[in-house]
Length: 472
Image (cartoon, rainbow, N blue to C red; front, side, top):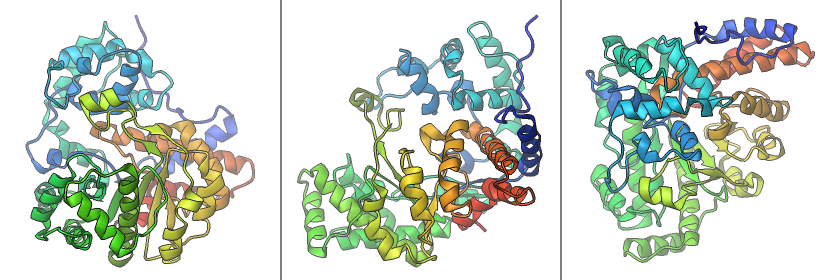
């Protein structure tokens, strides 16, 4: 008989006995702390409806999670077979059991990956699975998980409570309807929006004109000039803050953020508003100008500003054309933070009332640029390893390269950045285990005092995120 599939209680810990023993003790200090989730992509509608439920295992664990389907796609599994919706509505697999069977038959592809680590923890801890997914076990596991999902305690709001989530934020366009958040807040759940205005700040974005029209309706401001655009966004920031938002989020290819003269900004905006085609250079210059405006607003209203930089979005044109954004084809590029952020940081980086969190896919900049910048500018905090580096070894590399220069108190802690709701506890657990192990190693090397390590672990697991995002 095959042995039950189980979790190693010492996963993520070093094999050295002294380090492992200390890591266990430090992990015990932080394991059960509440989860603070200051940046993620859970659909607020899922939590707005008290009767909402997850439909089936495929809908929960596969279809919305690009970490899952990008790996299968890389091995030749069509996204259509995994139920990923197409932009034009052309048919894809809709039978959740068929999607689940495809996933289970290819589960071996996740060996050694952080996605495999998260999935294993979810399946065992959350759903009570005790056999590894495979073609042979697929139907049994589907039925077992479905039975759990049909139970009242597995509805989204119930899981939010059972996961121990103290604060969770979604990521919401400046033009989004915030009524789901109003319902969530009225019912007393610790969920807030995050303000993401990228869709109206990129003049060359597909559907920009429609987004501006929607922004006018949401804000009540006629957006006929660049100045009016920023007035409308200021109104929307106020609406977001009224529902508990404490942060904004911005994705940009380049960190070169420079203001334009008013006349140039207005001329670019007028061309776009008139329907003229906008070049990539036009788009980048206006977006950089707009981010300077966003930084000034953040300094005024106290919202933490997040920058995600260094991703070549939608690299695979065919996938983008057929399936749209966020389909696993965002690829890292080199980033020049030191030159790129100089103007913004000279304008605002000295002011602790301004808070800027940086995320990158360019690990080479950790020690060379990011840690020295965060070790100087009072406004700056370093975000957790992002996307491909949200992993045990990614966390180790990050801590190794930034702490000596920036210290731990200039780090923003952890956020799960997930669309996969059920993975939230597993992702936080990997961070907490890795932090405990890293601190244990530093203690054993005599670089951290043993009595300081528990406080540092608590900060990295919980306190840093609350402080960085000003979560009460």
